[in-house]
Length: 393
Ligand SMILES: *Cc1c(COP(=O)(O)O)cnc(C)c1O
Image 1 (tube, protein in one colour):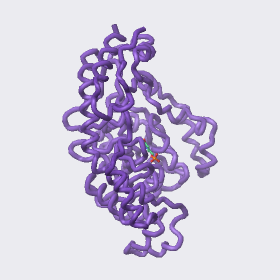
Image 2: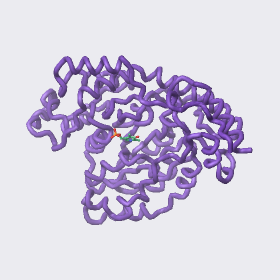
Image 3: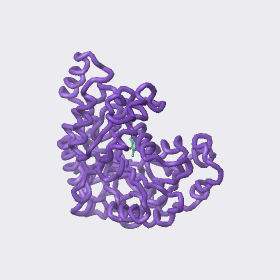
Image 4: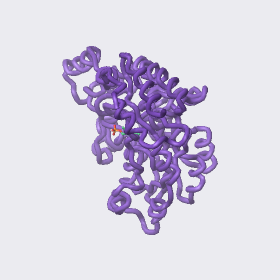
């Protein structure tokens, strides 16, 4: 088949976008001489507190460590259960296992691809204490329904907003929708630091716990009796490197502009693809989505070989890259038990792994991932639209 997409992908899909201002930010720290505890770390935390609208922020060396701190801060007991989507990145879930907490997998709903509030209700038991919400691909979850289930059943919300820098739900920023919230600043993310993660909360006690877990030099700044742990912390180290913090803060300053560029491109193409019968996950008015990934699906039954056809026309399309967690060897081979060291009588996890996630699996198979069009359009978007039109004919 003759290729339709002939324009270059390289420039428009290039990410992260690093320029002179990032170089200057890094050089400032380097020349300042303190490459371990420089004030840029607090500046980054201040930037996020401000931007997301929260009382406390603690920068971490990565999002996984931030999630570890989030699970730890809630003070849950071994054997306590947390509802989680099976369709997410591993780091939304696995850190909890080191604390003896039991992930209870739930289906995702097809509208936002987030955890399904109806399935949450099915999976709640006497030991269920919290829920992990992940705004997958930049689409805010069904927070109204999730919050209402959480309130009814007294569940804490752990929000993983690693795909959602700049998104909002009912005027509230993603990152401000959980009792504790975490945003990864890893290099693929919308405001990358290279490696980094931000822990956010409005609750002082939770903030203090996050600091105490792994930020040894910050414990001394605490104004409570918690300062007595300043010689040990709680056994791990989670501080971000200032050189990363410098990039992270500069990228936060450019987030709005970068998000707008992605949105312009993706909405332009979405409009054309919607007209061809594709669902491009355009949200309702009360929701601002962002485009961590550009994911779509065909509204009707997908024609056989659609992806292959698009690929032969020059489109870089694939299925989204997260496999369902409950199917992974870490769970199916029982490895989680070596880490979780669960107390007697909490074999529930096996029942959950073996239960049916056909809705999520089916929905997942239909999703089509396009490249992220991050830069200035070079005409490639029209070529994609043309290729999609040819492919479904
Ligand atoms: C990237 C990511 C994380 C983990 O972040 P790291 O900074 O890579 O440790 C957590 N959750 C989701 C959904 C992510 O995409």
